[in-house]
Image (cartoon, rainbow, N blue to C red):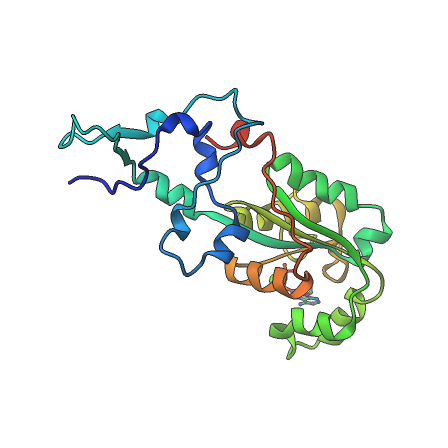
Length: 232
Ligand code: DAT
Ligand code: MG
């Protein structure tokens, strides 16, 4: 069976296969378009040193002599393109007061995720209640809202392949005493009501929470220069 041909240009105009990933922001914008999963992004200047992705394509055997070059897209790439997600991470008031903002950011940076939004913010009660609306019936809800609004938080949006589940792993279990050493909560916290950091629990909630905490224009679209060194 012939694979779907989705790329008709010369592969030499792209510098790295990692550039075939579309950003979550791009996908949000073009969600209804046919091309949304196949959105191609190039950065010729910063990535000119990298090989062309010609190994990702093969010539169509049925049209070996056509004048216009036709390249066959290898389907396994579609799977890796679709896994780019976005998640909302927040350093809670205890993390800010304890000077742990840099430590938290550093763990996500070192892992290789892309920061797309960042701000220090005093959360109003209504926003905290909306953010945690699924926990409204819990006995600890009023204490949770008091805690989240007790001082400034640091709001972040992070993007990357598998970032939602990976962020949860980096953060660790809800109860810091049960969180593994090496995780943020496992290393830096002792109590559930002071567990330093929040991370979205699903890609859907990642989108919902980023929309909730950030206004239009606060998200930044950019391509880190290190991208080809992180994702093949
Ligand atoms: P997580 O933050 O790991 O996603 P969650 O969404 O279940 O956990 O709960 C949100 C926050 O509420 C959590 O970080 C700490 C607080 N919390 C959860 N369960 C609690 C409990 N049983 N007692 C006190 N606080 C709790
Ligand atoms: Mg949660």
